Length: 318
Image 1 (cartoon, rainbow, N blue to C red):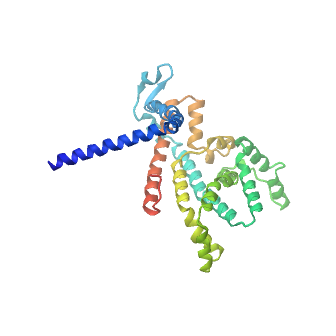
Image 2 (tube, rainbow, N blue to C red):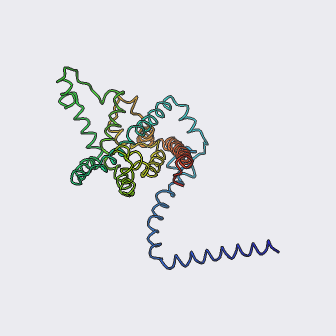
Image 3 (tube, one colour):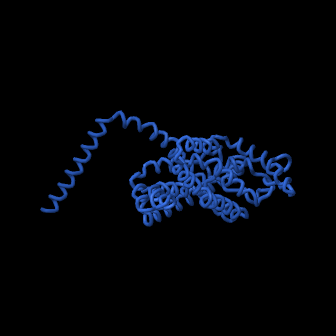
């Protein structure tokens, strides 16, 4: 009897919640209608293409279509893992992202802390504008600038090397220089833009905390360490998780433009290989399998880092 009463009560509460939700939707239906555009966009352009993932397990033929193509299972995955270039592609992809995470991720944080400590508002705005501008330079222009600056004939870097009695170096043709140039130019181009969210987070830190720390005798560096950084730590953790979530993805346009036969050993990554093999050579099923492998690794890293952050920093995406 008691069990029946509990069941009836749970059903009643469930109906009440559905009723209140329905009333809320109808009372602000105009706002919910605005959600239709992003929902449809995600369904059509993000979830719709998932149907085509099955070609990673088939020998896809455009003439036969997706359903008519022969099923081959995990053959394409085995071919990729057993290929002679697998470890080179994997290492280049991982190392570029790992070094970017180590050296590039902290730079916008330091820049935001620096801007936040500038008391002259006019000078602060100048610093922000100067550091923002490179973000709006197109990839093609950026690579063109690198080519001109690092040119052994007439480039300013080579001119400086000659001035000190050295021999100019063909930086873009040496594999060992590819990653430092790629990561360094990314830092210069994106640090200002990426610092915006940290600057916004710092503006939300309670000013009374700075005053209390100052009253306790904390100097400027100590206030940054004990007030500013803890204040933006949740934002740092969230952005770190998001960065790790696309750890295996690299903007291949810039790499492709900087790539040549001499630096291929360091510049050949999974994304450029997928472009050359899938788009240029038409190996659609093979490169679809490689792309799926890439996405699975990204998902695994995202879940692991999110779980670790939730346990250690008590901040996570979910």
